[in-house]
Length: 114
Length: 112
Image (cartoon, rainbow over all chains, first blue to last red; front, side):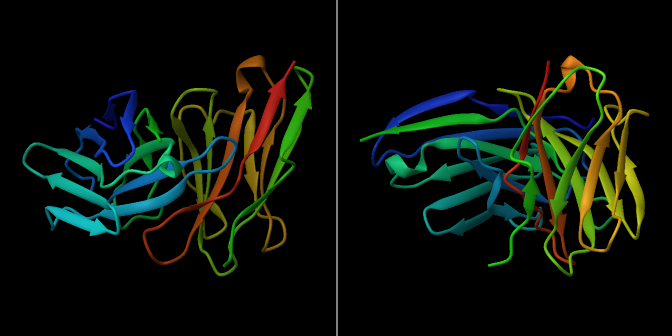
């Protein structure tokens, strides 16, 4: 019930391509879905997040698509660049609460080739 | 821009020894967290802390672990008797009244 499943595990695209990373959750009480970007040796950094009252959110080249009925959400990176090469984690949380703990997916290692 | 800081960046210890990992959350944040990431695996929740007490802890956070906010600025994670399987990257995070958790750079703990 607490799991968030993420796929694929790794992804290689050419510069300019549109990598898509998918996540699925089980707990319908989750109402906050962030994506974090992590570079080697660094902590996760928030990239973009969505609440379930909208089906899509776009910030710059990053877009989240959200399908509440299917309990799935995905990250699209438009015009991907070599600098986007990193590990991406989806997560889910229940807000508001005194914890708001994040449940992370397994992560996707993205490589964008020049 | 305010950020979460963590010390030390690396810690090597012998099995059975006590370690204390330190974090300075973003000032005026109210919620504090520890997560860990075993090499190559996902980030896992350990514990959350709010209003000077633990608000939730995971199954990983057993009696060997404790957290403290000793002076209103630092937030520490203590592992009393380290095991080999405690080797991981430990991340501190903090959150204000909004949704976003801000993560520190992590402490890489190696238990020998």
